[in-house]
Image 1 (cartoon, rainbow, N blue to C red):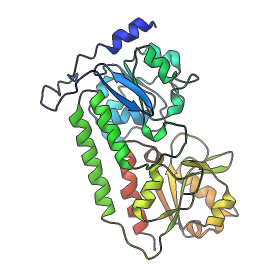
Image 2 (image 1 turned 135 degrees about the vertical axis):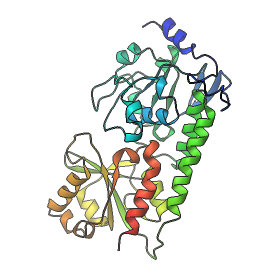
Image 3 (image 1 turned 135 degrees about the horizontal axis):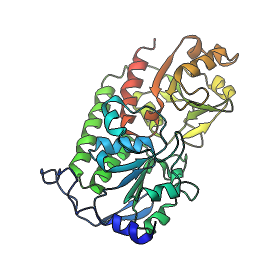
Image 4 (image 1 turned 120 degrees about the horizontal axis):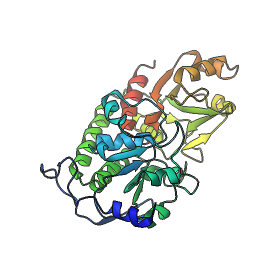
Length: 330
């Protein structure tokens, strides 16, 4: 595909009017062009996207919830069943990669995108979808979540306001700014309601966020990500809050030494070993070391969908899920 064609596509957004006529309905307007600094990169958006590509499933789900899913012409890195409330809309989006794989550069260009959105910086590299600068030179603006500007690196002050600002920015990019504000307000209410139900304890419970295993080694949430912030909000201590990255490779010996009171299980459906919550429980109960932990012997587990633990529309549901689970711990 030529750069000329991509530039032409990027400029065909039709000003500030949404394809569904939402701006005409009085929801506000975006003045184009405008620029923002995203993950340290200055990006200019000339017009509202009409041919967006999302590099991963949860990015597509966010755009659907913003009401612009009809403008997503391709997505990738599909790792789970779409939530029931958006399943019909999601299944209309062409998947441009094999399951659990990323969209490659040529496949991305074949979709003729005028905007690319990714929840993972590693998906926009020369080996994957193409570097951001390369896409920008072709006239295709991008957006990468501020939670993952650098792969796995901890994010200073990681908190829900960063996610809500992402909603607002995306809504502005698509010319539907009111939709971003509405979504942010709705999700803040979910967080506030859950925090109002936190059971106060004299001594904070210690928790481990058990995400996955690789070659038998556990991966757990560290500092600088939403799981850490949710731990703080709920008044518990993440036993790996001193890890070097937001998702850290730890050891079972470390887990045993730090002895969590509760283990939070990421329920994943990628098909990898020990992905599901039940597989994780089976692993913990069979292992001679971890089976002796009080949390394991006492079945003190809280299950949360793994997709919630990465920045996504479902992330706010971590708060009520954790609070409800903790309130049941004796």
